[in-house]
Length: 613
Ligand SMILES: Nc1ncnc2c1ncn2[C@@H]1O[C@H](COP(=O)(O)OP(=O)(O)O)[C@@H](O)[C@H]1O
Ligand SMILES: [Mg+2]
Figure (tube, rainbow, N blue to C red):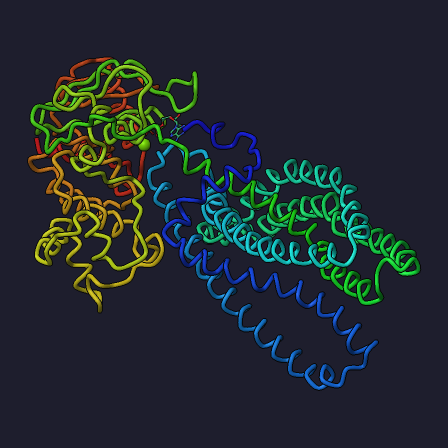
């Protein structure tokens, strides 16, 4: 995928964008959201009422000494607080529910999207990046924004009610109180720019931290074996220090906003106190007016002092929102076309027609590959390491798309096919197979979730895993740990073969499926693989030649090009051919070796077969 489209500079979402984007997410819960927000109205208005109350208190109690007022006062104060508390709880509960629901929905949506991303995305983005963008950003985006929307609404209503109190008591003082905020326009813009500049670095540094944790889990044995504790610690400390520097940079350049607000507020209060005094002396306002005004002004200013921090949070959340929606907007390149054709099997065969492929621009990995594989035949792919064998077979299930040429199934370009149905036709056993945490049964049944118990047993037998499973206390229901860590390499490969068998796909790809095994297990797995290959169209990358030499066609790939094609016998006849050279090189090596059991499997089989003859 185009890395730049994803990582390019992000502009903060505008409020309009935000509403447009979050609207559909909020819609299903609009009634609850509206109710939750409705609670903020009385809550905000109560601030105004509190301030106004000061006027009556001063005029009736302090000045007029009304006995009835004095006796009622305790009830009013406590009752008021209880009502306020109850409203607050309802508002918190409802808004919390809606907020969390939306965050959950957003994360589901993001995860669903992640599952559509092509392998190239995962080649170029590390795990920390994925967790950060798909998990943390979603939290930041929806939680921060929802909390602040709530805050702003409460404050909004409260501000309106308080401004009414201000205006009621003195419009002249109100003018002074409000005018000072003009001083804040420039600082807010400055802060916004700084946040936009620092955030991408913070995101990248934050994802480095997560990646490092993931690597520490996955590479724990390598760390132990090479005594890398110190090395890893220094690396992690470097990342954390970098994060610290960036966080401090953010604080240094943005967190002066709140203290500045504090000063601006003080200016406002000072102006009001000074001018208010004149107005009282001039008889324009009463003492009560002035008290209510000051009370309401302080209630108004208190949240404003902290709004500097909210403003910073919101700017950060807008940036996170933009990153989140960039993910949702991204269109994976490898997907079914509009008028996709659904296939339900392979009838004639698979062909590569003048295929060129590159992972990175202008670094061709496969060049001019043409190959025709009839249905039901076995094609072996051999050649030196890094030559492009894996790349070639990865093109068949469309893990990657080619640069030019075509890969066809029954004469139809695979890019015209429905991706799901294409992949339904193919069972892949990789060199390094991924097993999920869970039981052996669950892992095998990934090949076919609807398989019956006896079908699973059959696949287990076919993969020669039955002996191992019989020895386990919990049998097929044994838990195997994350990535299947509790299984040996050979057991993992056999589980993967059982999974592929259960899939019963017409096309089978075996990419060095036995490379991780010792000779004895390899011989066992070899039998399993032969079971898997029966009546299928098979692509096999192997160095064990019993599979290779029996193949209908052997393709030798070197440096991304087909060097030779033919059967075992044909290729051996070619005196100076690539296959013959490969064979000779390994044969000589075998001669030199003292311990034949440890020889390369390739010519061990050559010898076996020579013995047979
Ligand atoms: N995901 C990838 N991104 C970029 N380059 C890759 C990727 N996978 C393999 N390559 C490169 O492509 C070339 C062919 O690799 P591969 O097909 O794995 O070789 P083989 O299976 O024959 O050993 C190698 O040079 C390798 O470095
Ligand atoms: Mg390979």
